[in-house]
Image 1 (cartoon, rainbow, N blue to C red):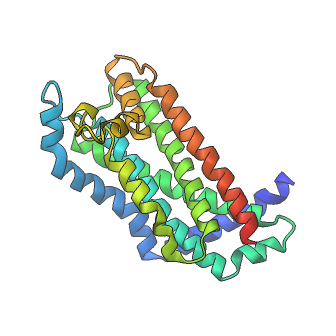
Image 2 (image 1 turned 135 degrees about the horizontal axis):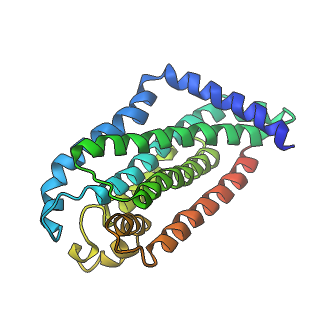
Length: 254
């Protein structure tokens, strides 16, 4: 059964790649947005980051972690809209009539979508390095690479969930408020104690904040404490929930 799914899933992912290469807006969403978002955020908040740093240094590692999350989850929205458009054109229904079933369709879409998100995350790091990002330990570099993949898988599962559960491309925007809240209420720009009291618990317990504290703890040698565990629990839990929802929604939609 697994072998039956793999081949058509890879074929579907390759078709999505070819379609993506012909779609200028999709290329900009995948490659342009990470570059410009990172540059603009660095320009807008660089002085703030320096001001709140204990030594007055421009430490871009927290911002980089935040931007990886933001970029990959923002890509989830247009990716979900594209999946809905394909579904309305009958692509999922055609897969349902094949021996591989809709599992191959969902798997192929997830593979391509996750690859898009990983590319976006890598671009964030590539832009952040000349802007001042400094990674001092191998462990911090490995965590950053792992976070790119983990966040991409989670965002990819969310994209599949939205694409399977809704019937109009505009519905993909339902995820935008969640992404914006998680993007800004975290320690990517400043420590949680700098937030107003009302939103401080959100900033402290945000999954992005745990990922930031893990990265900085590994980078400066102070240790991660519970942050690594909570990062894995948060993103692993979200991945399981989104994947379970996507599986149920994809079965109902066909």
